[in-house]
Length: 270
Length: 312
Image (cartoon, rainbow over the protein chains, first blue to last red):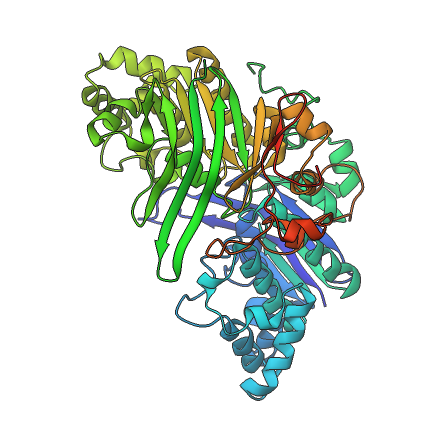
């Protein structure tokens, strides 16, 4: 199960009324899913991180190059294979508040995909699957199922999104800033859930973040993006301990040391 | 002489299921020029406490009891006209969502002019240019509309507005939570520089203990509406006395061991029903029999800190 980008890039505009041509993502090669792996994609706002995830999820068509699933172009897959790709590549998004339809109970978030992807024949048979997925992310089904989204905390909602993705047994999970809107106290719990998916469920993850500290905790390798281009990539510890690019050093330096005796340089003028 | 004194602050929200006690008996003093960090998870009452300082709690919420003393005036009981005179001039807010805190149909310059007019303060383009320069923005920003600015620039404009009348206290409610890490550091540098310049005290609300370690002189930790620990930043990191404070510090990711996670299991209690004992007891690794039956009172520690815990 391999998800690849082959010189895939995205540009916008350049036609008569669409304004000047603007490159969102420079042509990029990337492969994930062949072996369990966590790849962190880091960079500031506007660096192309989200465009990259939208390509991999088949939500955005590359304007050059191709997105390949097991060696075949995602945008040319016949329907049954496309359906299989849709199941095997799952997403967890940044905002656990906007991801839910507020008028439905959260159960629907779990039973609907189970039915649509043929994992269960009825809502009754979907329920054990939903309960198992909830347990795997540390949620108690009795305290979660039957509730409406507003009755759950942000951390619970985000773990429910992870549970929904896991239930479909994907090969690749694309997590776009999954902890940036969650409290610091819950961040560690959600990261641990993601980490265990790779180490225990043999899933691959693309973890998008602007926080190098969390990338350091869970990722096997890192790519650093800026202005739509990959500026640095490599094994996690070496990228963070010995960054080759000044931009990567800036990202590392932007993290506040959680120790008041270490000077972060807030008082310097630069 | 403190810049601001909070005494026994209680804030309640009326809901269909009963009274939600969002802030319970919070007291602290803020020295002139001091930077106080208020940390806690969602629903801990940190933002409610911060907004109370400007009497910005709207129905169904209300300040049920307590005093907030600034210049000898109790903000909690002040008349609307007195509040209008004090806000921005004596105590100013840097809001959480800089994205939508500015008026979208006015240029940034017009928002400064509004503020000066409302307080009868001398304004003018030169004054606005100077304020914008103090937060690292060019004079041309005065002619731009908020949608023409990036998130970081909007937050800088909000800081410039907050310091425009040289208040004694600045309340900053998670001013960087919507920004990415590089911009976050620049904004904090700006806030620190202007705070020093005008000598204002700052209450910084957030959930990132790492940021607080770098920014605050003292840190107040809130849990379920109560201030459970308040101490100088070095003391709180060196010897956290409340188990919750320790767990918050331990949960911070660092560049040490990888794949080690120290989340805080469990959930905070409902604020609808008062537990007889300590509200952290259900999640506390050190909870004893006394903790579930008797509410710990605030104790003053050697070195000036204070803690609400039987075991600390």
